[in-house]
Structure formats: structure tokens, C-alpha cells
Amino acid sequence: MTKQKALKRDVRARMSKTGERYTAARRQVTKDDWATHDLGQTDERIAAATGCDWQTWIYVLDRWGARDRTHTEIARHVASSYDVSGWWAQAVTIGYERARGMRAVNQRPDGFSVSVSKTIAADEVTARSWFMDARRRNRWLDRGLLARREGRTEASARFDGPEGTRVVVGFTPKGPKTTVSIEHERLSGTDDVERWRAFWRERLATLAGLV
Image (tube, rainbow, N blue to C red; front, side, top):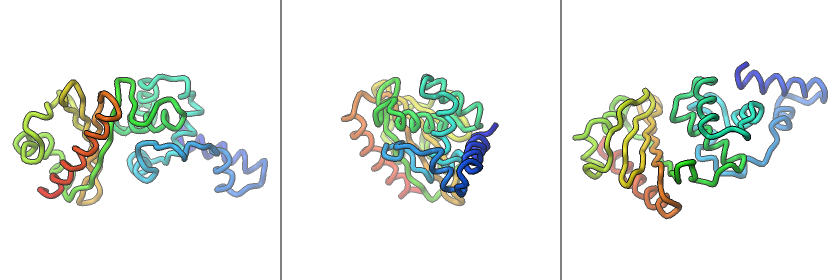
């Protein structure tokens, strides 16, 4: 059963008992205080990338028993059961863990991380080339800052960063434009998070000016 069908089934079961309209019944079935948390991605972005909003994701992962699962188990389940790409499966998992108090903002099992994104005026192939081609990358990023890792998916690229960190770059097409999402992982703490957040915002602005 898909995540949407599972939710609809329970909403309709409540409707039959209470006589509520669909919207009111859905609100009650998924009622929670998770909306007060920073989940890392907006409702609009997570829905556009995965096909479901946060309300649906949190509901179906609760039903699956994600509260009692490890980060790796949740991410694997999201990717394999719902055909969500690796980068977005991680985003769903991190958002869920924040919603359920299983991790602090920016905290991951292997340290802290920070996410920065920007939409640039280039198609996905061109946007990707500004990361994968070293000569292009050196035009907007410090030479040698990133080292490509072998293997990538169609939606993301992985790099070794400075001081043992990792950088994952996601590409989401938006018509003639592309949203570039950078996840910088294995940071040492909140000071590192803010330092790299400022750095990537400035560098992505530079990239946007070049393309």
C-alpha cells in the first residue's frame, strides 16, 4: 500500500465514523505538534521532490514504526519502498527525526550538517557541470576544496570536503532552471554549521552570477 493510500484509508475510516468532511478528518488523523519544528526542507520543496508533504511523510513513517528505527533503516525504507532518490530519502529521514525529537537541528549520526540551496538559471545538465568539471568548479570555488567521490546518482553528486567532511550536492530541475542543494556533513558543531552556511550562500551566489 502506498503512503498516500494508507493515509486516505484511515481518513475515510474516520469520516465514516464521525461524518466529517475529508479535510477535517485528515487534520484530525494527522494531528500533531511537529509543525513547530524546523524540518530542514519546506513543505513545498519536500512535496515537489517526493510527491508527499510533511504531514503525509510523518504519518506513514509513524505507522511503519520509524520512532524505533535507526537513521539508516529509515532512509533505506524511504528510498526502497517509496522510490525516493538517496539525497531526498536522507532529507525525509532527517526531517522526520527532527519532528519526533530524535535529533537536534543540524545534528546527524556522524556529526552536524548544514543545508544551503539556490535556484540558478541553468538546466540540470549545465548546473551539474559546474560541480563535476574541475575547470568550471575552480571558477567559483576555491581550488582543491572539493574532491569528487566515485559513484553518483542522477539526482546528486558526492565530494570529500576539508577536514574530513563530506559534501552532497542535489539537483532539482525547475523548467529551464535548477535548484542546487548542498548538504555539508560531518561538521564539528554549531559554529562550523554557521561558518559553512555563510560560505555556501556566498559561493552559490557567485555561481548564479556566472551561469
